[in-house]
Length: 307
Image 1 (cartoon, rainbow, N blue to C red):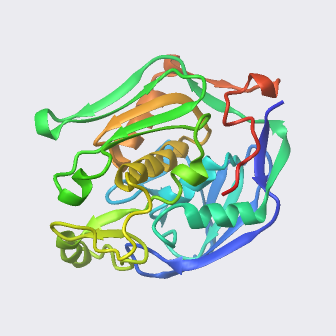
Image 2 (image 1 turned 180 degrees about the vertical axis):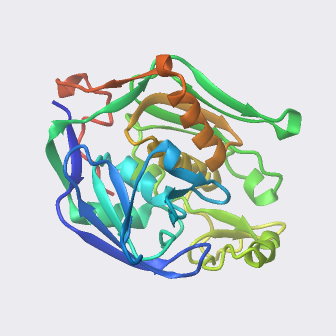
Image 3 (image 1 turned 45 degrees about the vertical axis):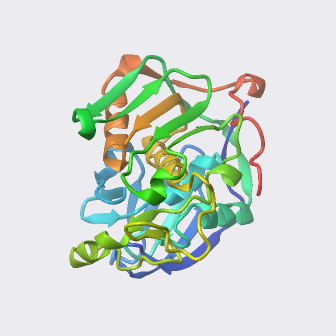
């Protein structure tokens, strides 16, 4: 049987929120089978649990935000990407503020935390959402066109194409493909950082955003070039970060997907629209498990690979 996974031990991190600039403590704890991923705002007078789901996403401007009642957690996608990339199913995430810490702007610090805690197999079948017919969402036309799509696939692969009119971005790979069964999430995707432009910083900060952002947790560009002294981590880091984001956004559905995802100029909002469009069409998906681990798609059955 292909089994569910959680952590072996508790692990913690301290950082600041990218947009809020607030100090935040994060505690990642093992959870029983079939719990799913549950964020818990422990700083509130009465702690509030926010289980992840496509419909728990309340805001997708600049990041993915989840909420329950009046409680929210912003910028969950990088942590969720690491959780998905390592194949975890059940986890409690205690948080002392309203935003996940940005750490280095990628998922690599979260991967390190999770791998340091260790992964434990649980005596319950791992449940997948398998896409059985295509589902697509589209917006705009011509230069404003953007879209995202699921197709049936025995595994999980992503193809993302970006389109930025900027010299530093245009000189890199604009299209990236990643297959969980053939590639290595930790090596190939997890280190890709979020990015932004100096011309947008003042506008964002007047709106109370990007207050914790800087060269130590983002790729920053002026009108012509990357300003980070260490340059890029990958030749195609911009497109790879969009893959990283998409992995986190798509795991908000609550279970690993068996599907081929493809997208052009998509973002947090369209990724969530795609999940909701899928769930709204019950004939487009099914829940599956694998009694025989050898029948499971490559990438899910193997042990979690380290650095």
